[in-house]
Image (spheres, rainbow, N blue to C red):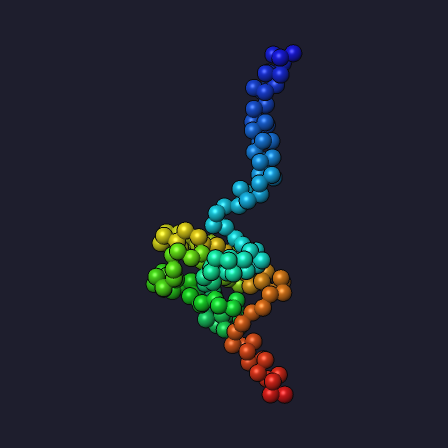
Length: 150
């Protein structure tokens, strides 16, 4: 009987390793996320409040003027390398785009320049708005000013 159990183990070692690995990832979901991956809108709020994260909106100035996260600075992707030095390498950086897809290249640029805590807002502003979180911006302020005058 003992020999047949050993045969089973040796013949199915890959299956066993896969099972154990999956069990570990299920038990500890934080292990399955890479250190510098995307953050949900709620996780962004926590990073900003608890770790004073820097919000960097990499959209064009025209896109940025239509609304962004409160406290975000606009550094368009084209200007990122030249303006990266204005940011604090000791604080987390969260990259903001319209839908979260454009930020992967920018994330690599930050990593190559020595920034260790760099994240992307998963889903970008689309996810932020879907979570019913506020935006600030010139167009939004113009709308509220019109309401005050009326």
